[in-house]
Length: 394
Ligand code: 13P
Image 1 (cartoon, rainbow, N blue to C red):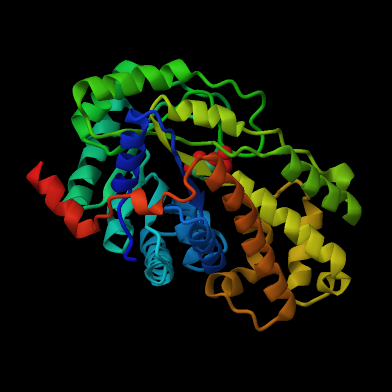
Image 2 (spheres, rainbow, N blue to C red):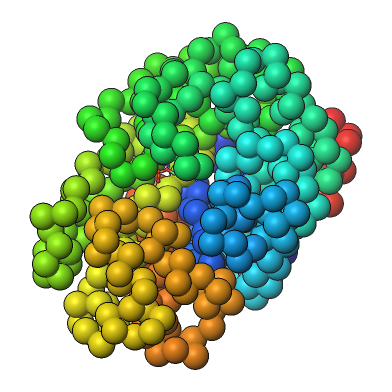
């Protein structure tokens, strides 16, 4: 199937909610062809729609630059082109609808360029800017995106935690007045709110302020806007994943240097939030930790991989900072092989399998918990060109 924009999935959740059925769509962060194939395989297996997303950093990484945070606009565009080519080629063979969404585009020019490169949906995140500036930039992105038929997600308020390499110590909860004005003046299709979730694996005690989602969504519905809410920082970091990871690190002998992540947002809480307008749920840390668990296990079972000229360099990075469970950090030595799925080195191939297993573990669990399984056929599929006509007519 051809890639579709985000809106048809948001609309499906909205319409089901009106019938008292809560279905939210997980949006899963992708960093390689292996991630993409594994995610689409699981979506097919469960007959679920899928949102595959790449952050601005992931696009830099996908361009082949190890210091991906310093990627230029041209390099990020190159990465975007490659991700879009990989996702669309693999999704074309699938029978379920797949959305390719840009996560946390902080540069409006890049958000617009990502659509040109093949993304069907983009987040423009101007939440750290003054409201007027955020509105002006978002509006520019929406105008360009809707002309093409792509969907746009914006953000009001700010989450605590690490986001695109920048650490935010405290959250700024979404102000419903600002959110209402932002949606009215920008025409975004989806709005990320800050209501108690936080990015990353150290979320502390999670206490969702559902009243914020309820108030914002109530105003959106009252005014008749076509907009659904998004929950960022929504990894659940379930106990079985955390204890599995700790067990592997202990077996390797590095438990003392490992800071155990906090449990994340319980899925029951997320499902409760979906009653208040949350239709898209962002999950990244779960995938990173699941992948990392399998990678430690691989090195535990294959001691010679620690000495391999290529994977040995990865091992050195892992043991130098066991708490840095960020695959884009410790996988730098296999970045090229990861991007192109080059399996010529058997240990690299084994590590790529760990990525696939990590993605599959999380998506199988989360898609079922969020209610997406078996619902692929309920999405009213429209391609980007169809949506361009809908926006023009509206
Ligand atoms: P987590 O850090 O909880 O996985 O959330 C990811 C996210 O919100 C990406 O935008």
